Each structure stands twice: as C-alpha cells, then as structure tokens.
Length: 206
Image 1 (cartoon, rainbow, N blue to C red):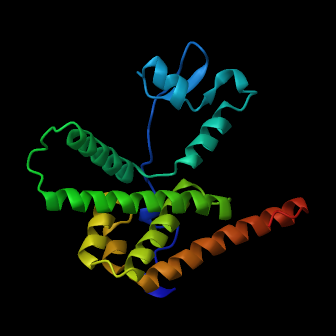
Image 2: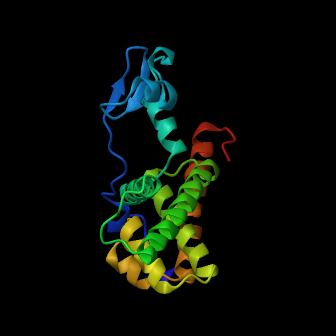
Image 3: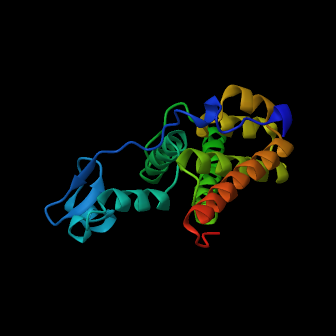
C-alpha cells in the first residue's frame, strides 16, 4: 500500500475515545447508561436486566455497545443535531444558526447514521476486529462512499474533522484509492486472525 497508508500500529488507531458512560441499575434490575433517568425511560430504554446475568455482565455490556458502534466525536455531533431538532420542533430559536448551517449539520448527521450502520455491519462481517479497527474501516468505507457519490471535498473534510478519529496526516492524504487500500488492509487483518484461531483450535472459524 506504500506511503499512502497508515498501518494499525500508527497513532490514529491509538488513544481513540468512544462513548464513556456511567452504568446504573434501577430498582427493578434494569441496567441503563447514565446516572439519572425517568422510570418510564428506564423501563423502555434499558440495556439489559442484571437478574439475567450469569457471570457475564461485561459481555452483555459489550454486546449492547456493538449494537450502537460510534465514536465520541460522531456521538457528540448526533447529540448536537438532536438538540437543534428539539428546538426547532418547539419553536425555540437557535442563536447564530442560519438555514444553511442547519442543512449542513442535518447532512452530516445523515452521514453519521450511515457510518453507524456500516460499523454494525462490519462487526458482523469482521468479528475479530476491535472497536478502533471497526471505527476506522467504517470511516474509510463511509468516506469512500462520499467520494463515489460526488460529494464536495470541503464537505468530506468537514466530516473528517468533526466526526472521525483520523489524524491530520491521514486526512491530508485521504482519497478513494487510499480508502480502498485501507479497507483491504484491515479486512486482511481479520482474515489472518481468524485463520490463526482456526489453526490453534483445529476448528473452522472462518
């Protein structure tokens, strides 16, 4: 892949921040993210019930997280857009926001939704990859689709800056060819890991 590719040992696959939340347990055993939530929401939006755990609490948390794989920057942008939508629905003015600004954030939010679905699909297809690797390959796939759909480079750069973990060097060299090469590279990592597990166990994990 040459100079145009960052490899998984390099900085942009390290020290990535994902969603950091306190987990709370309601009186009925429902586990939910955060410290304060109405009883109605706890009964509707809980992760799982602690009474269903059989020494697998962390695994249940992990399984839930994979249902909503998203990095911190993208999550913050989604929350910002949700707040703006709330204001618009309730006729609350959002200061210093033009219609063009709103449409821009709305479009970015739709890209984030696509990225989140891609990340979920990638986890199913490439199960040996961890959160940073899934985030990176989902980001590369999302950006490749943006290039292929003819989106302006300025809009792609805005998405990269505000919603991804790619470092400055990666953002400066990113292109459709880079994305394709990186996707192939990370896919090969998954294949090698699963092949190694098959060799070690004698089973068919591929």
